[in-house]
Amino acid sequence: MKKRLVITICLLFAAWMGWQIWAPFEPRYQGRKIGRILDDWVAGENFISGQALAQIGTNALPYVIARLAANDSKWRMAYTEFNNFCPSWMNKILPTPPPPFTKVYGANAFYSIQSNSLPCAIDLLKHPNPNVRQAAALGIGGLRRQSAAANQALPALVEALHSPDRTLRRDVIISLRDFGADASNAIPALAQIVATHDPGAPANDNDPTRANAAYVLGLMRHAAAAAIPALQSAMQEPDPYLSGNASAAFWRITGDAETTLPILLHDMQAMQYADKCWDWIVAMGEMGPRAKDALPQILEAQQKSKGRRFEKTIAIVLQRIDPAALAGKTSEPPSSP
Image (tube, rainbow, N blue to C red):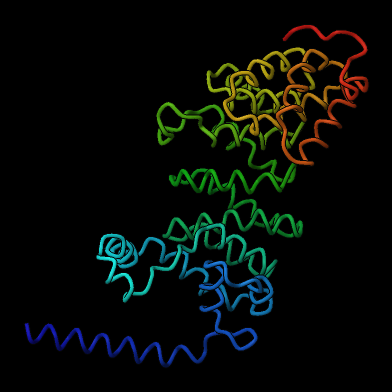
């Protein structure tokens, strides 16, 4: 017992000495260490984090990665659990567990550091920690919004679509939305995801991974023609979110409004959350006058919409389908869906 105590004290002292040696070299911004900046950022007390990360650059990435990986730390989880159940008087003495540094913060860190972080983000898609992998995937999407130079990440993203990490596959698909037709090499993998039920998906729940893959295929338009069989199969699925996204993608690839519109109208009625139908409404607007049968449901959605963005979107859609509908009436009565 005495020997164990001595060993423990020695290890703690060695860790303390290591920290004292390392800490002075920690990158700083306006006199503040990057570790403190990241902690305050997560706590909502730091509004200069983006500037700090941009200034510090890639030297900040080891600290970002360490915090992402720490979310799964056994020590962190054990201390958080202990803190939740210990007496209130003890909570006043012990430090409060810091909020988790989620993958969204990690993705925003890559975005703030900009294109210099891209090589690191590509490598991190294979990191052993899932939070790090997923943050890198989302971060690459943000980098693509900044510059087409992020296209060099496409081979790694396509490879990640075959990862056993279901959440990583979902985040890669979200990232691919920002690449558009440039991501055409991903079409076979995306079509396979659309066509295949994910055994890891929650029971009796929508499968957003397949639906999101269908949405991305639609963004590629005619370039995704090879995915039409997978989309046609998904259009017959009972899940309205999957079926609706597949139908909107089918329309954008083929221009076949006659086949697509009835399915979209049916799925709009079946959807529990109206906010998931907005892209379908946009697709109906792309159909122009051919989507007149959709006017009653679109006008109903207009009544339920909240926010200027949605109101503007519906106004554009109505203008394309039937300008008279903007005044609350159509040039001829639309048929019932």
